[in-house]
Amino acid sequence: MRRIRTSALAVAAIAALVAVAAPARAADAPPAWLAGCWQGEAGTSAANAFEAWSTPRADRMLGVSQTLRGTGSMFEFMRIDRGERGLRFVAQPGGRPPVEFPAQRVEARRVLFANPQNDFPKYIDYRRDGDRLEARLSAAAPDQEGARALYAFRRVACDTIFSDR
Image (cartoon, rainbow, N blue to C red):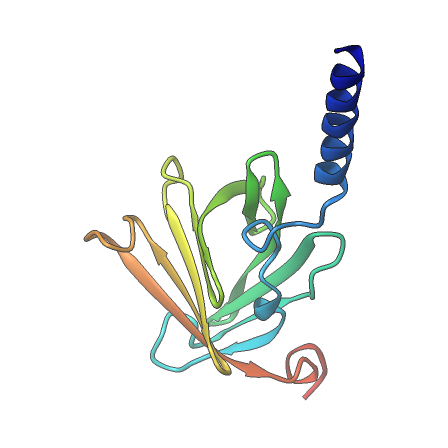
């Protein structure tokens, strides 16, 4: 009886170590398909904007965006990483304090982040189709009515964004 308990404890300990050392599941891993540089498309909220994302490193992606408005501009620092509750998007518009949006849905080329307590947006829905990226910001869940903004981007070489023209 004592041998069975010892074996059961050993199996449980090994299982716990494997779980701790296991790599992130796809639903917890940052979306590598988002990496790269993206220039806003005319006719969308991103018309005078760009967004750039690093490749995932140490389970974290770093992002930056800038939108030109007349003679001024708006900027945002972003990151996607794993928090205590899993994958999350953290935004710092204008360098303000971070706002967290936990992932609600993770698919092969789509990730939906949500923070119903935030003023706007409450939902951030990234989708990729080939060289096109959409960021859908909304005050309501994707299947409900509410204020929305579509930021559509095309993939570009990063030197077109970060170098002198």
